Image 1: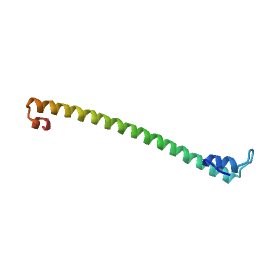
Image 2 (image 1 turned 60 degrees about the vertical axis):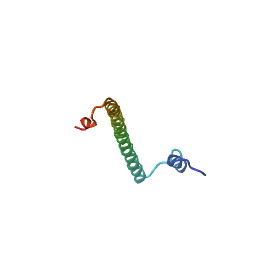
Image 3 (image 1 turned 60 degrees about the horizontal axis):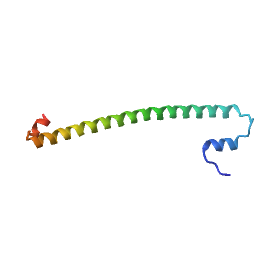
Image 4 (image 1 turned 180 degrees about the vertical axis):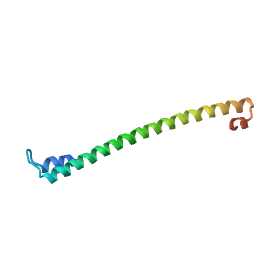
Length: 85
């Protein structure tokens, strides 16, 4: 028998309408809580990653504008030292 995921393993090992011992039910509750905590942490990490990506894109746009301004200034003869003050 081949299992594609841990949940399919559980479905195949616990027969329908099978009652669990109180200890087993407690363990399953703990596992469920841990999975929910992990899901919340993954969501938080995803939000932080998206915020970081936005900041990177903003910096890329800003650097692009600086590069364009520097090339215009160089072509018009303005000293590049002004850009770094």
